[in-house]
Amino acid sequence: MDLLDNLALGLSTAATMQNLLYCFVGVFLGTFIGVLPGVGPLAAVAMLLPVSFYLPPETALVMLAGVYYGAEYGGSIASILLNIPGTPSASVTCLDGYPMAQQGRAGIALFSTAMASMFGALFGVVVMVLLSPRLAEFALLFQPAEYFSVMVLGLVAASVVSTSGATRGLMMVCLGILLGTIGVDVNSGETRFTGGIQELRDGVSLVVVAMGLFGISEVMVSLRGATQSYAGAGLIGSMFPTAAEWARSLMPALRGSVIGSFFGTLPGTGQTVASFVSYALEKRVNKRAHQFGKGAIEGVVVPEAANNAAAQTAFIPTLTLGIPGSTTMALMLGALMIHGITPGPRLISDHPELFWGLVVSFVFGNIFLLVLNIPLIGIWVRLLRVPHYYLYPTVIVLICVGVYSISNSLTDVWATLIFGAIGYGLRLFRFEPAPLLIGFVLGPMMEEYFRRAMLLSRGDATVFLTRPGSAALLAGAVLLLAATLFPWRQWLARAITRARGRIRS
Image 1: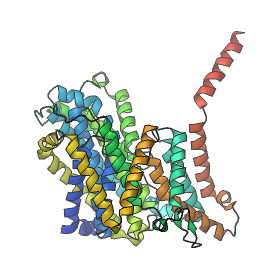
Image 2: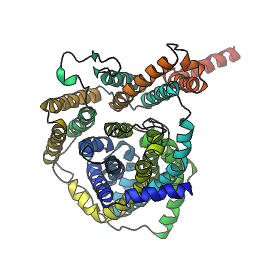
Image 3: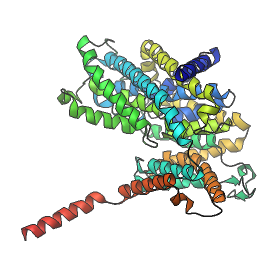
Image 4: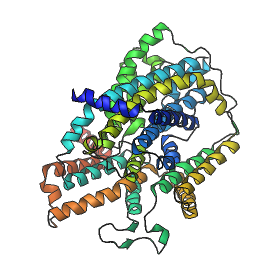
């Protein structure tokens, strides 16, 4: 009965006209931005983050979540029609989606994407409903030492799965932590690392960092390889799969949803890993593996189901542990903290209307996506033909207006542009900015829990090792880091070569 009561509470929250309206606006704008090649969910959420400050917490989170999974779906449209991934996780969809479009089956590919996305998302919602309360109950046993250790594990996980490599990812995490220390120290009242700039006494704004690193820099990177327009976007063709294609899609969608739900709950992995792993495993178990890469409908269904299941289950560690399940979730954490809500084990008990309202809104949002995007596919195709010299300057202007509207500060606008240039420079030197944002959000929280643990232990630093939970989490972080940084494969290969030489001699 408790589950039914909670779902009823969520329905009463999510079904209000205001929340339904902003849920619809979120998925629409998310899809709109996700369709644009190179501008993914992180940039989409960053661009619309200032809007959430003027909304109630439940409405703000519902809208940002809609932007998030709407952008994930929108990324697959450019992948299928143009062979240009709208998001990193949609790059797998290119492998079979674009060949289907070349065969005149773009409509079937887009329709299958919509259905697989909804299937994976609803599967992820079920997992979230069943797993989140149990995880929160377990996490209530945590004390400051365990919170600190689990954040260390989350930061290490975010760095080692970085696309730029573990070492560079770790450097970005450390830089993000350093940026988070700028401003007035909450405990001592001392000003730290401001360089005498009064505007930095309150710290660097999350919106400034996010919009600069993932809004401005995304546009700059996209402009490097942009042509004037994508006039070659093909015809849509028939929309509905055959009965045989429906039958072949069911099990891949289920397998993709299971894999995506698993990876979504792991902090720092996210949808990209889920998409690649699900596609690789499907090629090993599917009877039509020889057709993959040539326009197999299973090759479109499985990564999209995994992608959207991971997008939903990424909220589990974010809300119940306060550890972002993906980089975009770090922005969600920031939005919650700006509204005065602390993510963690007590969120479900202290703010049940927010948690369960968000869960139910996922169902509404994915229905909106399905109903909205099937008739609007033709519009998205026309959008891809808009010249970039019109589109991207408009995006930059909207970013600057959004930043200025928060505190009416031109300093924030200049800081956003500076962070945009920094983000662009990082990408040129193959540094992925995403771990920086996770370090920026979690760094101050990690410092706070470290100080609490030290106060409770009266300055005894061994508390992080004497408490079993904290020690296990730190050991996991060390093992994960060692397994990534130490060249195990090269060492093992040399050892095998030496052993073979000795045997022959």
